[in-house]
Length: 404
Image 1 (tube, rainbow, N blue to C red):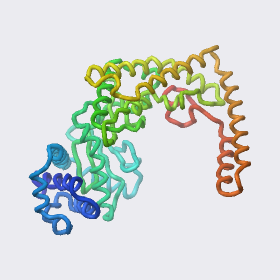
Image 2: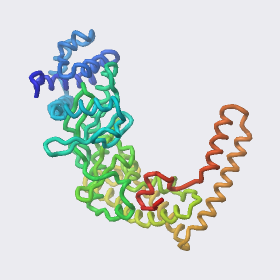
Image 3: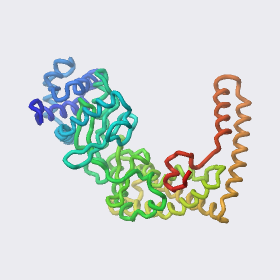
């Protein structure tokens, strides 16, 4: 720890953030995060008072003496992360310097990218960590950088005591960076259907506990397969999640596609149109491997809800998942009628022809102009590119080893 960095300053910085979120609005809120983003640990309340006409040390001290239990917990959480950041600072500087001249994927340790940040793997003390750096650079982005980092903390703060969810260990408002423990495993989309079918029931039950606790905490998971990791020893783990205003009782609905990809396999519970026999062969095999696991997952959700005392109706959209399960079974039965998918290809070709004709007729009824031009371009693309269940080069084919 440098001489200029003391636990008291970390506490002040954390307190100022919670104060800003609770008491300030408009320009003063923005300006306070500007101070945090540009001065970091030097952002004492006296400096903030000099820079912000609406910020007085008396207001801040009164707030500190009257904080609610939740606000105290939020201060302690941020203070702990600020205390834990320093060992990673040199790596943050190294990566940010490289990002000035090369894309994130070419930087050593690159792990993933999102809309607002890039993620890198760094080692400290023999352990690997996930280093998340905001994409906002430059002196004019100090407010946005600090605010972006604080917004990201909301999910991990609520999930700090929930097993199976990413845990943060470090934070810098000045550098726009957070450091988190690595969730073991790889994205569930990289597993084959057969591997998914082999996942033990206790791992689904552990995931169900995580989902119920996350739902009670108001956590939102968007169903992105890259945000749900699986390790054969440790089970499932979530990364990159946000929050809702209230309890999120529909959470099981967004998590389930992450596990099974049912939205990709069967949009609206119907067999997708394809001109390729191998697509239906793959779909049939994947359904055979997925359906038993899907049943296990729904059973685990029901059992865990009862065991946790929240009732079988706590996750309010389980009935929709049951409907999806019924659709999966119906589709599997239809595909396996004669063991051959050729008739589905013929049906798809007919469906495609009727769809294109309908589209042509609709375009013909449009007045000349931009709308008609755009629709004609769309029609041209649809006529050139055959419909597929598994687009070439997509993530999904890698799950079932379909090949080229």
